[in-house]
Image (cartoon, rainbow, N blue to C red):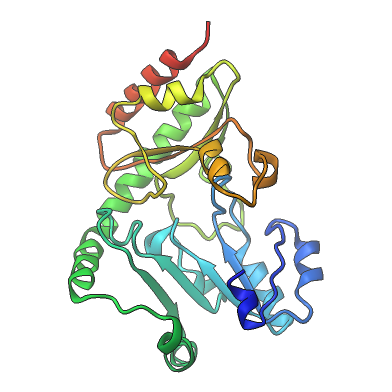
Amino acid sequence: GFCQRFGITTEFVDGDDEAAIRAALPGASLLYLESPVSWVMSELNLNKLATLARDAGAVTIIDNSWASPIFQQPLLCGIDIVVHSASKYISGHSDVVAGLVIASQQHINNIARHISPFLGGKLSAHEASLLMRGLRTLPIRMKHHHQSGMALAEQLHAHPQVTAVCHPGLQPQPWSTLRGYSGLFAFEVTEQIDIPVFCNALQLFHMGVSWGGFESLVMPAVSVINQASEFNSAVDFGVSPRLIRISIGLEETDDLWADLQQALATATRA
């Protein structure tokens, strides 16, 4: 892969498996994290993982795109470097391709001198101005994503055709570093639900691989699995084939719930 061309080897471990992480850290230079974890939305204990990596002499990086800076600030947990896909919540309007890196001056200087000249793209002035626009409304948008996403997760959790809801707010951890929840989560449906019919029946949700914008999106896990050559099945991907991910936009919560209800009813096999 990409890293191997630079003499870098990688090993994937379960972020919830402390023993596996301890076993992988000796000799490692970097521990790369994402929390909550994509698709299953499980939250990692950032304080503990930062300590484990520091004791092993490894730098920590976390993708904090899901929570945004509004709901989680990993630097306060001891994480060394934070990255964001600014195309998601920070932009908020699905019209920017950009990324952000937040770290100590030492790390930023190292990136600027030894990495950016060879790998880093340059953000245009127009896209930078769009990000500034997004930052001005980020707090109020995240408040809506939190409230609407939490309400819909609870309603789906109670629906008879839904077997599980993957949302960190439904079972908050005592060590959680999240101060709120974004609008991205997933849920599993029973075998009675025809997933393609469900997705096509939605009126306010649109199929889309991204998330974090003003519009509500839906993406069944099987669609990602079918397009990823390295995965042969949902088991390989680490999720249920009945899993559906949704990104809650800025529409009215009641309208979105009505849309989900009618789509589930339409997709229920007799």
